[in-house]
Length: 193
Length: 193
DNA sequence: TGAATATGAGACAGACCTGTCTCATCACTG
DNA sequence: CAGTGATGAGACAGGTCTGTCTCATATTCA
Image 1 (cartoon, each protein chain N blue to C red):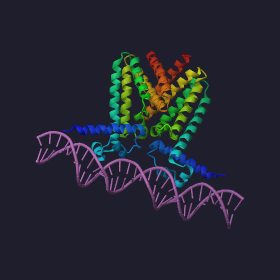
Image 2 (tube, rainbow over the protein chains, first blue to last red):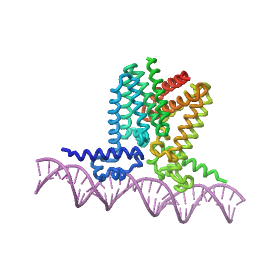
Image 3 (cartoon, rainbow over the protein chains, first blue to last red):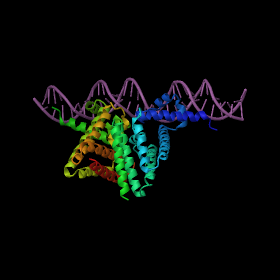
Image 4 (cartoon, each protein chain N blue to C red):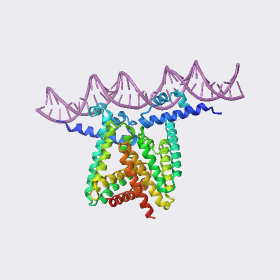
């Protein structure tokens, strides 16, 4: 039915848009720039995505799927909840140190699309909930659901805050303090049951 | 020398721009929109601010000064470090619950101006450093500087993360978990000395 | 070969953007 | 009153934005 080149072009547009959105933001990145960088005709893009907003949602969902796949992979590699959470922090530490780290694309999307009813806003909610839910599931192995939920929320906040600090040029101090704080939070939640 | 009406107009533009930037973002808010809302001529604005970017910096610095004034006020009202930090969380709890809460303007600015050499980026750095420095100074009353710095970084991350969660509609859970995590972090840093 | 589909290239519309310029008007001060 | 500086109103330039449209050109499959 659908020829394979179509899928390739579509994905290529998504990935090109991702790297541009990441560097320059959403509003500041024009369609013309995206199609020029992707070396694709404007109509090719608009045939795959009805509007720029829907392209943005697709980019976010694509990155969220990729992130969750990596997260689930990491969780399988070690046994204890502490080490599973540690793996998540390891992942962020590598991310912060990568050459083209520009902060969290989802947080940036939230900054530019503040309307809660906007599809982009909701795509961000999905991603953050996905991360929180995964951490909560990990923690429920060693604490009651209520404590696990609170602790997962705290870990999520630490991660988001660390990502912000990392973007401000304090990557090393951020991940270090976040790790220590995460240990304290988990230990505290374990005792509180 | 300088007639008083000039200062009033200027400040009025800053405050109008603030409320628009907060709701719609920086790139999405045009000059025409700002001057229409402020009921001011375009030249009046451009006589006070050479460019939109400099207006943005002025808005951020204005809000940062206001925030730090409130912070210093709160710190004087109670005695112990724990209660001073608690006051900061109280402040954020009220903020999250205010009718036109739209997340952190500084974090949003970082999302839209990702270039570290950009004046807007640097204005954000100033504000976040100001908050962190204040919390660090508070904590140094009960722990060594090294521990205080790490704990202040963790508290800053919790606050930034909580602000993000609050914008996603989880204000109550966010402030609650952040408070518990902050207690755990401070207690842990106190023991570690 | 023929037909269907995907793509390329670019003109085009209509709106919006930042920033400049001119000229009239207002308010205050000496 | 005369003069000075701040402001209002809006035209204007030059650029960019999203999204639509047309027509020519592959590519693929029957």
